[in-house]
Image 1 (cartoon, one colour):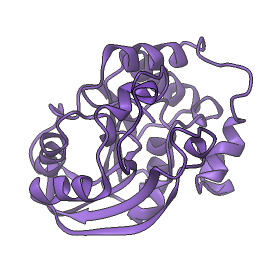
Image 2 (cartoon, helix red, strand yellow):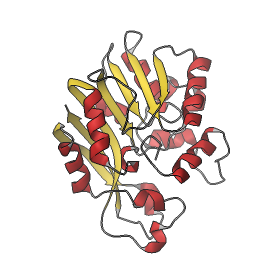
Image 3 (cartoon, one colour):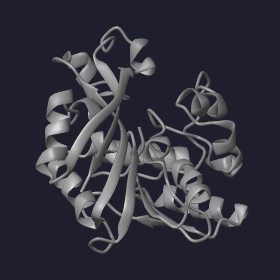
Image 4 (cartoon, one colour):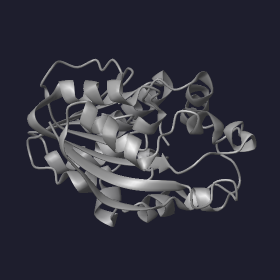
Length: 247
């Protein structure tokens, strides 16, 4: 789960710690292995600066996007820049990628990664998804990796994405949805609690996309989220979805 929406202070603090290298703990998955488990290929990862490989996502939305050279791409909740750098490689020097993240520390880290790697067709901006710092109809493709679920008002967030997309533009999302009610213990959990309080069911999430004005909303794939399967309070109740839609 990455930062990008109007999440709580704890979420932003957690990602600030990660950006500064203070959030790593024993037992965390190897970044390269985890990225591969999400569907990133060797070619994808070879195009990414080493310091940007870390992912807190739940899929590979860039693979859904089928990006073409010259396209302008928006990465919603860009974190350290993994999806933005993969996209930048695919759209080439005639294309452009803009990453937006709520955390100033993550934006700083992604900027540093771009400078070190000499990637010139990508830029990172600090901002909330509900108030994107972008012009109307300025983006060809929007991608998001496990971020929209953090937005408390998902219809508003998706409306903003729709606003900045060009007519006919597409959105490709990997995200988590929930099923059923959760215990107080789970809702107060340090890792899961804040997110669970704003998470939505599958139907409500898809409805929010449609209410925001998107068309051709399609679920391209779904599976239980492995990280949640290790917790009996969550087992079988958190699903990772791959979704595409058009403006």
